[in-house]
Length: 258
Ligand code: UDP
Picture 1: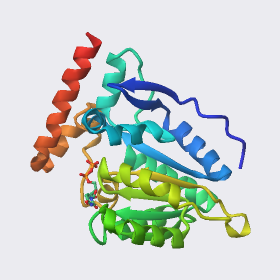
Picture 2: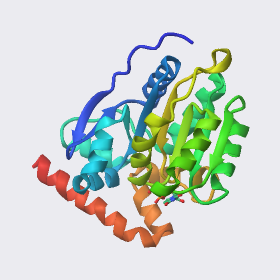
Picture 3: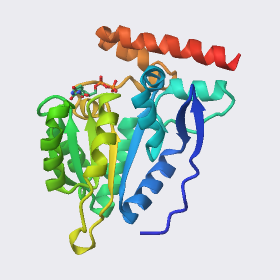
Picture 4: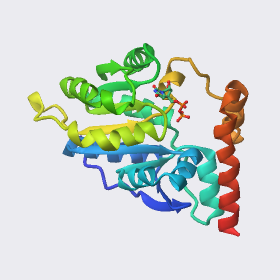
């Protein structure tokens, strides 16, 4: 592996939440470098719902403070950054990040564990990625739940599978808190035959649902126009209450930026 310079992840703050100004390429280069060095690292895919949840949930706020990388996932975050005078260079969408990490994994023979979503979905998401990125090793899949009484059993499964990538799909903030509580206890190693020893945990929200086609992503033009939230509202109208947080977010950013 070629030496990778440290990531130019200039952190900015959006309503107090750290978001790292990284491109997809920089994020993946940095994570590949950390993977080669070993240790455990947590990544969050920050969108407007994360920012608003962190305002009222100090535990979630401190989890987002302690992560290795908070990638800007969503046009709302990019808009706010521009408005607050610290523009971010690129959106790093969770589903694309998972695909890119799978592509790196196929190059470096990383082992990936898929945790969460409805029963059967993690298996299908993993199979879909493994087909597309041969070389990526599916170390394990399991739906489980983020309930504390399941944690010990899930940790045992994950430890046994010895993954390098742990994608957790329990929705935010549950998945990110789950990772913060459990990731430090999941370190394993040393790996046989010089295989990578690092462990990178990523909270991925609905990514497995998108990878399996259970949920459809908005058409390209809607993503470009920043209307992905509207598409989601049309397809999942029961989310309207959650999407109110978007209105509160816009309001809070406007107040802050004057
Ligand atoms: N999920 C889960 N267990 C839970 C809550 C959620 O497995 O207790 C899964 C759900 O099936 C979905 C994913 O978490 O695959 C993300 O859900 P959502 O779409 O709400 O998250 P977002 O993408 O908005 O963060």
